[in-house]
Length: 81
Figure (cartoon, rainbow, N blue to C red):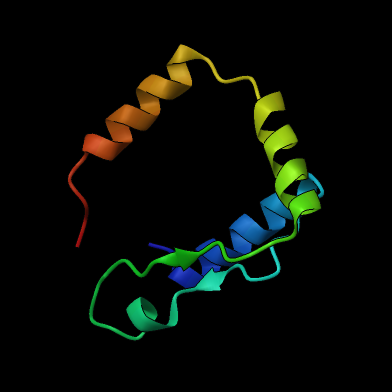
């Protein structure tokens, strides 16, 4: 399993690939330092232009029922600890 920091870096790279930079993106320091197996990812704050650009990018993605069904399935799967 990848570390939380690796996942954050992967998200940062994916966002940068579509021209979105979230300056405060990072691992939540409280949950990251706890014994919780899944730390929270802080998406942080961004300016209005970045929020608008992120909205445009997300709306441009082709979201089909197959993707929605997969997301629902993943959310129901038991979490590995």
